[in-house]
Each structure stands twice: as structure tokens, then as C-alpha cells.
Image (cartoon, rainbow, N blue to C red; front, side):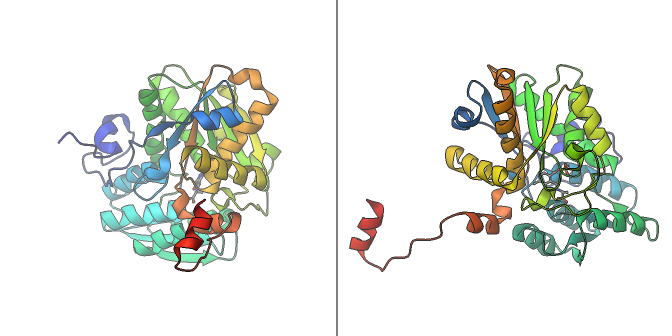
Length: 347
Ligand code: F0G
């Protein structure tokens, strides 16, 4: 069959995991790279911007790339159950792939800080969902403790198999663009994704982009240089105070001659609205952190972007988080069932 059947089918021999002969796949990957000329004009004039729309993966985020590999390996190693800590997307993705593999899935989330569509996904796919009175970082500590107590496979990005899948996004970007972009901009939470992209570019062995990583200002441990005990941001996906792959991400940014910065919630939500309205691409708030970071970096260093190609990774689908729209936007216009009233609105 020649149609797209997912990452392991496409890249199996280049992925350092067990079980590539028996993939657990939802045909993830192969997401579009969408030109965004109006966004470029608005925030980074003189550059070309492309959006790597990872929200079009099967469960609506880039996590599916790492989950096909993590669950495939867990299955090959005989695991019957998997567990993850999550701000939401990892939970939904783990739940879906575990369902497909016939494994039990346990997810630990920070209570009250998960977007509705993510929680709905995790529940729909049949995971056991546990909410704790604590942060993502606390949840990840519990997961690591649990692993030492009972037989269960951890599928957070501390598991190297996750990065093996996620690195394929770098290869897709290069193949779709026909070259390696000058800049790659993305949000940073637990720092697995930026580490995975870097791994992908290194393994390809060719040119490398400069990495532009953006954290939310209230959850910016890597920018501050120390853990944040009580991370706070409305971009809940990246509300993380102790990134598990922080050191690896910092090394990647340094090696790439990149930039790491923080954007305020206001800047993140401005970017979130802008990309939807200018380009018709709806991402979740955390995904827009990379766009907010690009805008700020351009303002400080415009010469670094003249004539350059910039890829912004939109990590998750806006539909995951409907509440963020209703908090921000003017609501419905209610009218009687009457043509005159409608003409007034439509004029
Ligand atoms: N964007 C979205 C939409 C995310 O869900 C995440 C992380 C990130 C960016 C940051 O990626 O952690 O690799 O630096 N979400 C995790 C989760 C923590 O549990 O879903 P990272």
C-alpha cells in the first residue's frame, strides 16, 4: 500500500526502538507545513514563516509522534500497562495508543489545569484519569515513584522512545521545505520536543536551524536558571516548573546558536488570536508561545530574520481548548428569527 501509514512504517529502520516490525500506529505524522505570509508581514517582515501544524495529528497534538514509538516499544517489551504525568496532550495521546495496543493506561494530571478537549480525549479512550492537588512536576515525580513499585511503563518524554518518534518532525520539515530552515521556533514545557527536533537535525547530518524556544513567563525555569515551585500560566500545556529534559534543551539551544526567552500570557494570547485570524490556523494557546517568542525576538534583532525562513511548530490543535476562546473573544450575537435583524448584522 502506498498511502501514509504513520511514522514507524515510514521511518522504522531509523528509529532506535524495539518492535518496529509490529507498530502501534494511528497513521500519525505527515502534517502540513503551511506558508504564513500575512503572519510574517505582521510580526517578522522580511522573513518567510511556515507553520508546522502538528495539531492535525490523530489525537490533536505532536505527542502522537512520540506515543507511536513509546507504546510500540512498551508492547514489544511485554508491558501490560502504561502511565504518564500530563498537562493534557500526553494523556490523550497515551490513552489512544494504549487503547489500540490493548494496554491499560493511567494518567496523572494537575487538578483543574487541563483543557477540556484533552481530558475528554483521555476519558473517551478509556484511560484511568487521576487528578492530583499538585503541579505537573509533582505528577511526574509520582509517576517515577510508581514505576519503581509496580510493573508499568512510563511514557513521558523521560522515556527515550518518545524522542525517537518526535525527531521525525525535523525530517518532515526539511523534506517539505526542501532545505533546513534558518530558524525553528517552538514552545518549551518539559523540553522533550525541542530536544527531539535537535536530535533529528543532528542525525540527518546536514545543515541545522537556529532554535528559538519560548517558555511562558510564569513558568520559565530555563530562562530564569532555576526551578519554579509554583508555575503559573493560562497556557496550561506548558505550565511546568522543572523540565525533565531542561539540560538537554539548553545544550541544544546553545549548540544551535539559538535563543531562549519567555513570553507573557498576554503576548501568548495575542499571538494565538493573530495566527487564527490572519492565516486560518487554529492552535492551542501554548502552541502560540512560539509565535509570541518570534515576534519578540524579531523586535530585538530584526537583522537576524531578513530573508530567512522560519518554521513555527504549532504543537496542538485549538479545538482542544474551547474555554480559551470563550475567555478571550466576543461571544455570539443573538437576534430574533427575522431577516431585517439579520440584514442589520450582515451589513
Ligand atoms: N505544546 C503543547 C500543546 C504541549 O502539550 C506541550 C507539552 C508543549 C508544547 C511542550 O512540549 O514538554 O516537549 O517541551 N505537553 C506535555 C503534556 C507536558 O503533558 O501534554 P515539551
